[in-house]
Length: 444
Figure 1 (cartoon, rainbow, N blue to C red):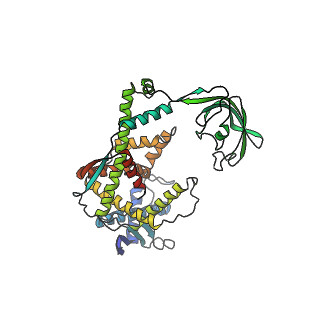
Figure 2 (cartoon, rainbow, N blue to C red):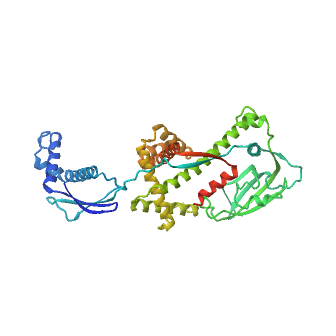
Figure 3 (spheres, rainbow, N blue to C red):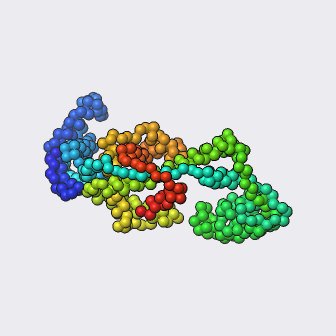
């Protein structure tokens, strides 16, 4: 195989690989000769099929395999010799592929962007500040009150009382569209908390002020994006009977409440709540610390970036932000979304930091263990109740999906490695200060 360089500008590389016809023919003959002892063909004993007949019968297929193997080997040898690491899959095209015929040399062009050489990052001077928030008694009490509210019961109001927002009404209802009842549109003794937003918009509002025994004709319109296509955007009437009006009653904050949430007594529940709150604060503080570290790393080293990686990342950012701004658009029929300069700047930062962290992690011999991957898969699988097995099989068969799970684990381990060697000071702040710091992350 002959290799000629055609481009070497920045990170862009171009080559022309030529496989002489004689070498290719020799490879085909070698493959056929290797297979000959096992070939059976009518009219010949096993292993005695003439080479000329083998070549006529299997030559084209073997030729294609030999060409692919030769190109793959040339690519491997080239990358090993140059030390290049392509940023993306190299583009390989056969010259005159449509007019090529057996007996001609095989010429292919190879183009790729090489990953840059990452300069050594001096991390010895990195200084970071870790925010520390202690859960005070007021925060524990607030959390207890929320638990008591979630554990609330409902008691019948006095006869003739009008339902208020927050009350529970027990209702029978029957829904009709175009004068006909529809499946799933009726129920009896249904407990509905007014203001919960669990029914079609406007339904609950029309029951505020109703009394036990009232019959209310609730008129609503199904949302245009309603899940059932045959009801989406349709006007509906629900014939509703109010059977009871109940007022909410928060649970008492005592040992009984604690036992409902799996704690031995109220003191044990308070201890659990305090620990959970401080774990949440620690996690939030880590986000702030990580952003600060990434900002410092981004300013610490500069190097050329592969345009292909930046472009791919910019398109991904633009696509993600589009769907965040248009949550109703679940498909991909929105046409091309062109990245802005802001998207490209963010993409450059992400690519630069990703390459730098990968280099630091590789030099520190940081890896993601099988146990860590299993934990990540289990955690992700919880988002697909009832489909866990299918999700596991998908991950096992999809290397790209595995990498998407592995990448954030690896990144966090590299961040922890850098933090361990950095000068980290602690600063006690309030919960409000921590929340402001978290909000500031989204504004950058």
